[in-house]
Length: 394
Image (tube, rainbow, N blue to C red; front, side, top):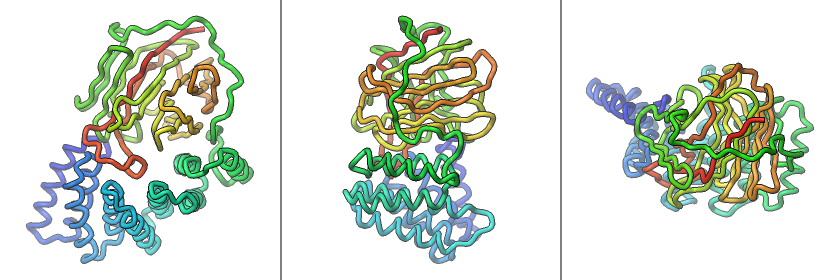
């Protein structure tokens, strides 16, 4: 499941469930039921997810498994948001947080568990239109995990969505940045700021994706792309580029030296989230992603892996469905930028990426959907269209 093979995971969990039921092992049976609820939810099968989530509530409460009881309430909260019962969703997420706070485990980072539960509650309040309550949840999320850059980035995305005044949000960020205990040195861009300029000014070369230089990667064979007016990539549910799940569909080519990449990305369908962007790839533990749609429709994030370390470099909110993304590599330095119109550019961060040539560059889509942010079934995953792609050297 963690590698992205959700269908294979269902088969294995069903086998384990049959065995645990047959021998009367309610503890392992409860684990299987709750995990299957999560898998069906990630695949967009709401009916089966709901069935297993409520079975999970009953059996985990009976056997006294607090961790899996909390997870069951999480699934109930997300499903309730999808069904429009936001008050029930709030109650479920509050119950999750309450249970997690009662758990003292030497093996689990409970603050991280509580932070993510708080994030889901914050977005539920946003869907209800209760911005002040949402703000409080996202601020609490930061307090719980001050030094975790990914949790901080996701919390900032929620805060920027909740704040009605951009300058208030910027002032809050500047206040946080005065505290050396918050954040990570590589996380340099907490919100979008005007860029000082573009390094590459030569006429762009438009890429021919029918060229054999381009290679399509689709690990499980359940994604697709088509070339027409640009490139359209469809990602199945669960496809990601994180940890051991590197199954996101992508189209890449080799390049060396200094270069700049520019693409324009837009949603394909209203019923499918658009999540994806530009990928700079060396290997499984050295790659950078400039991405639209990670933690919201207008969210832009620059992150990846450097030297086997999971890093977040920058993020921000670009209030335009049509986003221009630009990645520039000059020596070991990589700059990320975005724009709504191609005239006014904003920085999404900069970082040193010390790898040898050649590298691969191209476009990708993510199918792993945060259904607290995007409250839908989405059984067919995600889709994103790249209207153009320009690659040029200096």
